Image (cartoon, rainbow, N blue to C red; front, side, top):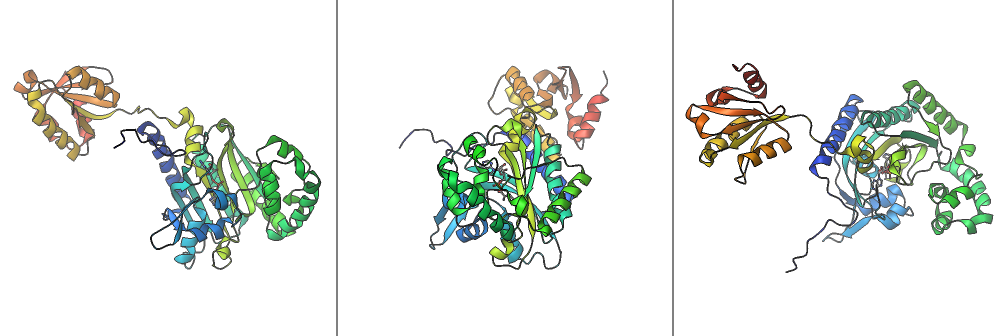
Length: 431
Ligand code: HAM
């Protein structure tokens, strides 16, 4: 049998405890802000019928043609690890008739997504998204609510160098009008574009605006934009959204060349960027998808939402999302004389039973090493079981913050109800 170490798959990563603390903070913040805006949690399956994404994201979209993890199960069904969350939410909305009695349905979610992209800093093959969807209204004030919610979350997480770019990509009729003029502009200079842009020109020319190549961007400097081909209604919608954003105090920049990478988008589209992220600077992306419900076999139902990449959020948080534990808590039960092992375990169980955080040594280490471990793990106190004190029914307690040491009756420690009472017992101890 091979003894070679097995590593995580290229493009996937482990979130280790220091980083996981920030990860939990992100989830807690999203949950709190989402709930305060009346968004309920939804949990969708991680794999779905391949057709859901083909129809939802678009048959010719890069994510669908090149990046999906698709497989057949034992029944020969085509299944795909979800590359994003919106299609699943809308499927669930239709499958469970969620809009039937509640008007606008507002949900949030968090979970892993899968795309077979070329891994690099901030771009993974399994990544974690937090997202929000609001389905059932075309009100521009709802656009501003969702964008405001997106802003609020990133702001509360103190994302560095944050900016919001917003645009409208209209409806298919607006885009059809734009397409003719855009194609006319690009055709004579098509030879100057990268292979990806040339391919997009034949499929969905608008996506050429998404190219990161500097020369392609220069070539498109004077290209016509959808904005200039909008119907009065769609332009009006966008102007109202901007008005509400001003009202909400959300700073933005209109970028008329902003397009999104999934085909279901209509009207409002936006991205939050963080300048500290390098080339993968999009921390959040969202927009309206007013035709998606219909594409998935449901009635015409407008929707809007966004998703943020957890890995990018962590990278753009203070200290790059690595939090050292600073809040000291609980008790480390140490033994100086190994004969007190069972007493230590008994005390450990008793503390934990009362909801008091506690741990002990499982490696038979010296008292010095046990104190080191207690310190490293952030314990506030160490209770030391040693022969001299135990003979008097007492234990030594060391304050791990200032290294002061005092004695308490072991029976008193057993009698207190919770961590707060234990704190009071320590504070009121006779000197
Ligand atoms: P998206 O722009 O494809 O939109 O992804 C949203 C966010 O997920 C990105 O801004 C980025 O932070 C993160 N992300 C995407 N791909 C990767 C990757 N390979 N590695 C790391 N992070 C990544 C959507 O997924 C839409 N479902 C958002 C949405 C919800 N639109 C409406 N509702």
